[in-house]
Amino acid sequence: MIKAGVMLMNNRGPDGQPTDWKAELAAWKKLGLEGVDIFHRMLENCNETPASIKVVLDDLGLEPTVFCVPTDFITPGDPTLFTKSMDTIKYGIDACGILGVKHLFSHGGQHQNEGEEAFKRYMEGLNKAAELCNEAGLIFSIENAGKMCNNGDSLVRVLKEVKQPNMRITFDGGNFITRGDEPHTAIMKLRAKVGHVHVKSHVPAPPDYPRPYKYCPTGEGHPDYRFIRDMLLEVGYDGWFSFEPEGGFDSKWEQSIATVVQILKEVR
Image (cartoon, rainbow, N blue to C red; front, side, top):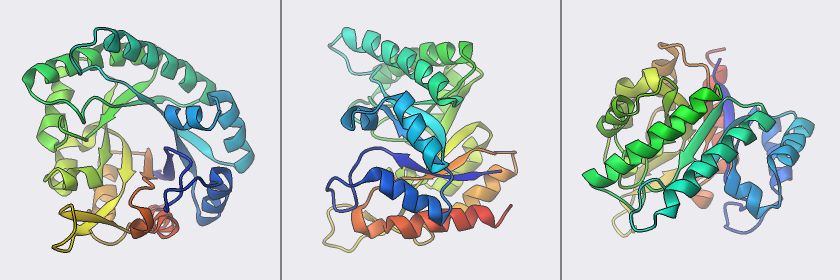
């Protein structure tokens, strides 16, 4: 059964100002929210720990879904980055144990780097990180994002290059669109190895807009998350669809979360 989650990336509301994130989670729980992606940076910013956020979620009746850590296995010039990133992976593995989750997600490095040499460095780091996660009984994933590993074909290559059975893809429907790839095509290539889904949606922007796409509420625009849901159900996916609270007021966070809940409720 696929469940409805949200990405707890920071403590900011759609207006960009600090918000009472605990109250927000409680309100979203009433909409049908079931789980929360925990980001290490959010914990740091709010003086929380994996143990303390677990208490918060338990009190709210919400499940932790995945633990998310920033790494950079790619950027050249600083030999300490790789070691620091591996230490962060080890911390993330410990955090997963505290939270009781079986999935570690790594983000970072993809946005600033590109090219074949950078890709090789990235694969070296991902192989080592996935190996550590495998030893701990965890799945490990990256998302499609930034300048590297941002489309279906490049992620298929990642899955071939990382020689660990626990390597997965966190499928971000909106990120495919912003990088000029078709998410409906990408899901067909990747669905057997999808470990998590990030939900955000876009519509073509008006001519004077700074980007070619702008955010919109889930259920409008593209991609069609019912299509993605059905393609994943065909291969037995039983993970999470986690709404990504970005896009300010354009993506209407409460409406989007309620829509994700409805999309999943239809197949229960």
